[in-house]
Amino acid sequence: MGKKERINKEKMKDYSRDNTDYKVKDINLAAFGRKEIGIAEKEMPGLMATREKYGPKKPLKGIKIMGSLHMTIQTAVLIETLSELGADVRWCSCNIFSTQDHAAAAIAKAGIPVFAWKGETLEEYWDCTMMALTWPDGSGPDQIVDDGGDATLLIHRGYAAEGNAKILDEPTDNKELLIINNLLKRQLKRDKQHWHNVAKDVKGVSEETTTGVHRLIHMQERGELLFQAINVNDSVTKSKFDNVYGCRHSLPDGIKRAMDVLISGKTVMVCGYGDVGKGSAEAMKSEKAKVIVSEIDPICALQACMAGFRVQTVEQSLKETDIYVTTTGNKDIITAEHMSRMKDQAIVCNIGHFDNEIQMSRLEKWPGIKKEEIKGSECPVHRYTFKDGHSIYVLAEGRLINLGCATGHPSFVMSNSFTNQTLAQIDIAANPKRHVGVYMLSKELDEEVARLHLEQLGATLTKLTQQQADYLGVKKDGPFKPQHYRY
Image (cartoon, rainbow, N blue to C red):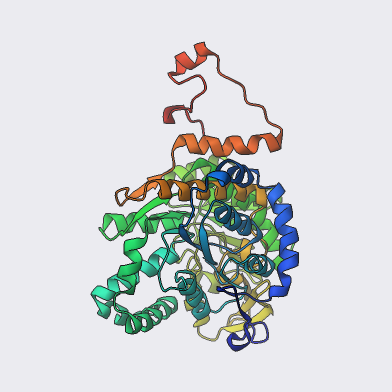
């Protein structure tokens, strides 16, 4: 990100009115944001039906909900849905590049505290997370909407540090962890029990992503999880729509906006063939690219083969691949060593959650490397030239290509995902004393989310006869049992 593109913290517009605090790039973008929110609402039937059904009952009345999730136009519809259901909402983004500034401005103008702008520094990002977690009276949230687990992580690490401050001084070469540790040290000086007080009031979190769910499960296994969590990611109407169909739409959009290259005819390596990988590989195949898949899981690898893709390692593909896409949620999938051996002008990007799938920190320190900014924070593209003269392009600094260089998934896809989030928040509110653990939404709710979107697509369901229902062992008008699911 160039200096001219980086937002100067001292010049950041900090607006306050009617006890509402927020930080956005430009409040004057609110009218534009409101127009696009109006378009999105038509394309998000699940959320609008949820408002209609639950709005009068106000099941979230008075509940403080903090969100850490990409501050996009679609997220604005989610935020206003939670608000209409009675919630007291504060929000930040979960990625330094994913905010749509007109969406943030519209939410701020509506009187909902939001702390997000496109092109935040990491320091600003974590400060925004802290502000979103802190109500004007100093208290924290009752419930959390999380994407990748950053808000949950900050609470848990802060809680642990209040018991043992030495963890904040443990050696690390992770720049982001150092920033988190410094933030927590400052808070510890102000209040040595802040995070204990916050944690005891949190009734639960609903988590959006595969990576965030893995974090939660690991905390639960280690006995560290402090409150209940709902795994929204693995609801079928989230994982298939967001991860498969959403990526199928937004990955090529991001690559084209960033590089203006023809994908057709090129060789693309998709690293990982989970749901995100499946959508990404299908998108590249639809563009008439030659697609290679890398996998560690034999079942996913076999699925890739059955879909007509070549399965081989990154190392085997370095001499022929033009575009690399990481999709795994794991780390060091594309290493600096890999990039040093790639074809000249190869393109490297990531559509998994975090930025460490591509080994950016080591690339930046590679001997003799030359880094040039091609496009700034609105669509980050950097060229890295190695000593031997060959160059590669890294998109969105290794972060989410579809949100860093484009506008993310389309509204209809996110309606499925965010309807699940809303139902999860209602479920937590209805069960505040549920035992600490990681839970799934019921299959009945999953089917209900799907049903809410069918009419807009012109679909008509076939109804079971009583004889057919008896044969399957289900109620005639009830939900299918897990063994009857076909996806």
